[in-house]
Length: 341
Figure 1 (cartoon, rainbow, N blue to C red):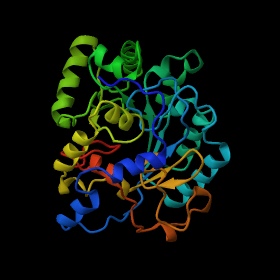
Figure 2: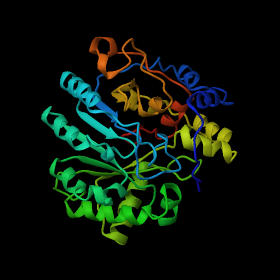
Figure 3: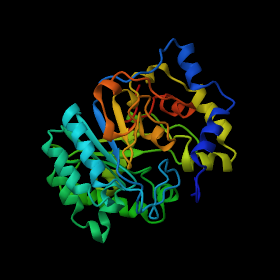
């Protein structure tokens, strides 16, 4: 099991470690399979990391979020710039993540505003336990009333495994939160309220096939807790931040990177989230994906923040790449939307 690490390597150290990995580089894999340099396509998803404040401190967290991250939260002026871009570009999906995005004081107002802009789908990436906080006692009802698609973290249908990764008592809280969401109609057929679960491995290995894992999760959650959900997303642990620390400390780094490299799947490239997603940091800086955001690899365009966004400058831009990208193309592929191949 992964043990929590108090502080990850800084960004420069992480990039240095990734670039020195004794593996075939991600860009070399693309060249060997005649995959051209990656460029963005149509912008379909605006993903906002609205802050790193979180009521949990998960051992695998690539955001390095936690209860002490009180200053790194998106301000209303930044939200307003995001609203302008959403109105201009009309993305199909607005994706709100964190930390625990619900702990941003502007979260609810932002959800309401995005709804007025005609966004087809609003996603809340929820850690579940936040729904049980005294300060958030009506949060589940708010999300249901506004038709927000909940993407909820649940590593396993196993208390020991989940608590080892996410903190003592988190599994029990997660089950209670899921049951509450079911009571409101989330995950129930015909309700129109989507409840997606998101799972990731608890160690230095690739996730199981998504379809197989989904069948298992649905059976066990239904039989043990009478819980229903819409679908399951399986994520590959990215070799950055706390998980990178774990890999190094446990002497698993080279083996894991070799595993990702050996499992490179060119068929997973077309579905990469960086092709149709713009990731916006809490401070308004723009990135090709949430992982690049955490490594501070900005978009390859002359405009770097949401305040200076230009469709013309951002369209068909070259995507910033590094060896952590191997995590998104290993095996079945991995993205914020699940498997890509």
